[in-house]
Length: 557
Image 1: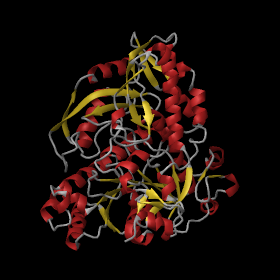
Image 2: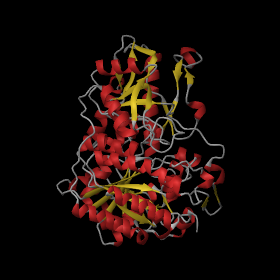
Image 3: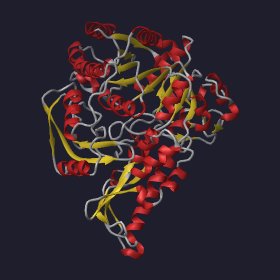
C-alpha cells in the first residue's frame, strides 16, 4: 500500500469555498489560507447561534501501545462513512504539534485513505495557531522577567515563578534550566526555569476552552504566573500584558476549516495534549460544528482514561456539551500487547494474550458507562488480523452488551467504515444517553483526585509526595479548590507506570506536585514521572523526512 503522504499527494482536494458551502457558509465569509484551508471568523459563526445542535459522537481508544490503535484514522474514516450514507456530518479535531511529528509520530492527520487534507500543511505550520500561542506565552514570560528585574513592585519571589517558557519541539535539554545569568544589566535575576512544549502551555488550554475574545482575555488574565514572598498568587492581569497577548492570538481564536480526502468538512482547532493538559479540540470548533451539521464526530487524546474523562468532566462541564455516543477504538495487535505479547509477537496467533488484553478494553468500556454515554467498540483492521481473533473480540463485546464494528477505513476510506457508521447511527437513533459527571467540583480537592484514581484508573489509593500536600493547601487557601481536575499522567498505561499494561488493580497512584491553571479553569495533579516536554527517540521521525526541488515532501507519514 502507498504511504500516507503519497496517498495525500495524489488526492484532488476541493476548493475550500466548496467545502464551506456544504455546511452553508459563503466563500466570501472565509479567510483563506491557500486553496484548501481557511479560517472562519467568529463573527460569521455567531449567525448560527440560534440553530439547534446536531448529535455529538466522541471517539476515544484503549490505552495506547506501540502496536497502534488508530483513533484519528477512525475518527476521520467515520466522518467519511457517515457522509457516504448521505448524512450531513462534520469533524472537529485538534491540530498536531510539531514535536511528536518530528519525534515519534511522523504525522498526526489520520492515515491511509482516511486523512484530513492537505496533511503536510496541517502537520506543519498550518495557519500559525501554534506559533501564536508560543509567542503569547513567551511574551508573558518576558514581561514577568522584566518586572522582576526592574523594581519588582508586585513583590514576586524568584523561587516561586510558575510560568516556564514554551517551544513546539522535543528539547529534553530545556526541561530544567537556569535563567538570568550575567547580572541585572545583561541577564536579569537568576532563577531556575525550564521549557514546556507549546501544546502543554496553559494558553493552549485557554484557547481551546475560550468561547469569545472577551472570554479569552478574561482567562488569560487569570493565569497564575508566580507567587509573592508572602505566598500570594500573581496573575497575568497584574502584569498589564493581557491585551498584547490577545493581539497575538487574534487570528488563532478563529477555527480552521479543512476537508477529508473524500471532501467532508472538518474544523481543526486547538492542540492541548491529553496526558499533560485536557486533550480536546476547541469548544468553539465543536460548538459551531454542532450548529452546522446534523452529526459531529470529535476525538479526545490518548486513551479514554485521559482525553475522554477530561472531555466529560472539563469540556462538557464548561460549555454544556452532552455526547450522544462514544466510540472506543481497539486493534487486535494492541489488545495482544495489553495481554503480555511483545511487539515482535503481535502478528502471531495468540488467543491467550488477546483474551488477557480484554481487561484494558473492559476497563475503558466500564469508565465510559460511568458517564452514562452509550458505547460502540470499533476494531481498526490491520492486515495481520485473523478472522478468529476478530470473532473473539466481537463475541466478547456481545457478552458485555456493547455494539462492535469492524472498520477498514485505513485501507478503504469511507466505504470501509460503513459497519461502524451504521452502529453509531443505531445508537443515535435508539439509545438515550443519561449523561452525568464523575464528581462534584465543590468536593475537597483530594477527594476529587482520589475519585479519578480509583474509579477511572483502578488504583486502590493515592499518595501525595514531595510538594503536593503544600501545593494543595495553597491552592485551596487561594480560593481555587472548587475547580475540576486535569490529571497529568503517562498515556502509556492506565496506571502512573508506563511499563504496566492491561488494567492493573490495587496499585498506588503517586502525585508529586499539584498546580492550578486558573485561566483554563482546572487543577493539575502531576503523577508519576510524566514530563511537560518530551524528548526525541533514538531514531527520530525527522531522519526520514526531506523535500525535493519541486517542493514535494518525502517521509512525512
